[in-house]
Image (tube, rainbow, N blue to C red; front, side, top):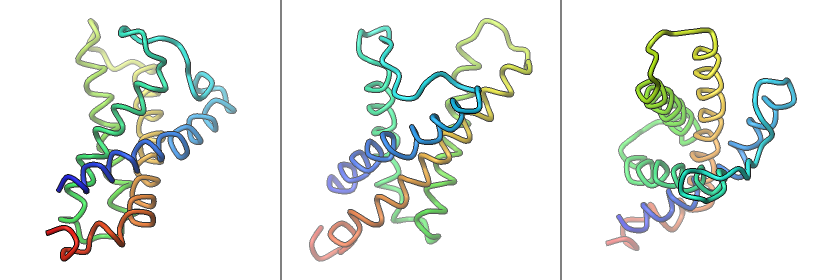
Length: 143
């Protein structure tokens, strides 16, 4: 189980730096988002990209543990997991705001969150299955 947690975390960080930021960059090119790899500081003083990697790693650890329960293709389950993460992110942001109305800006943020995180999840499924699966999912080596 610890290997699955670590593999999920590592795959999620790699997917964040590749797939997540690639979609972010595409949305930046069409004028919908700020530049990728943001270095602005968070409340804790760390660059935003480091914070994104950390939190996506936590989500990826959850995926690493639960992915063995899913019988679909890794890319599909990763995509669906990423969309779920994007929806959760949007709901958390909505709950943190003082206003509850669903404005055009909030719907745009939802679409951005679903696209970026869905692409991240796609990468997570691909990376986890391609790089880590042979050693991880062999039960004889884990138990």
